[in-house]
Image 1 (tube, rainbow, N blue to C red):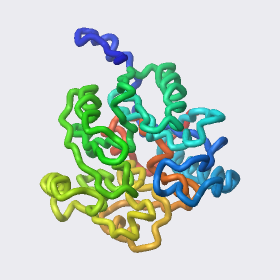
Image 2 (cartoon, rainbow, N blue to C red):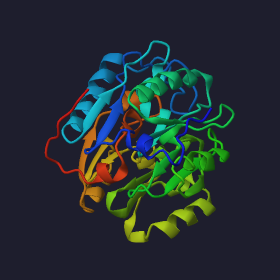
Image 3 (cartoon, rainbow, N blue to C red):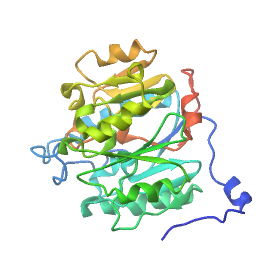
Image 4 (cartoon, helix red, strand yellow):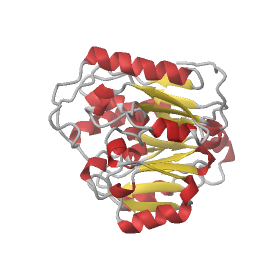
Length: 304
């Protein structure tokens, strides 16, 4: 069922949550583990993550984000070990949240918990039919201005979900085809950045999709990752204005981003990479894109 407001209901739209500073939602790794294999990164990592190490790594990212953003917390639930990857569960803009319809039954238990949190927080919910697979910010990302949606399909996500999700905001969407099973989510190989830049791994896409990307982003705005950088989750970053938070990548990627004016904070997130995610997957953006990117580095108040 799709929850909507009538077009004439300006009062209803005005009542939707609006944020005047960057705001994110995170979920602590209280029950995190690799309990099953539903992506290539999990293979060989069953029950390998250390929960104590994972919590320390998560807390480090949480504290770094707190310096420049509000961070809200979704409580973890037993039986949903991947809830920590909260960005996969929805896509948010203008107080509207498109709720995921996870491909794998192991993750479908997460949907109701986030749906309840968002409903209680006043968001308008845009549901995706169960038969139409869609996995939130894992599969779809706004450009830096928030006026265009990029969405991917391939191993896990249905192309037909793209138009349905974009209709939540009545905006254009560009579909990209993922061809490497290691990069089953868009956020593993594609990251629009402030200033019109793009961080991406070209070989994750078919030729037609690479052409769409190159038509939108000039060569001077494209930061291309090597395969070595991509498999270190170099695209799975959080970008707030000129700040980038990312898992440690042992190449000169941070230097290349700094040369383009970004402040880069690298963090150890190895325990989460065993499960198929890094910084981006651990934080769901709630604030609008324009609010998120006009942030500066001075500390901002944080509310839980």
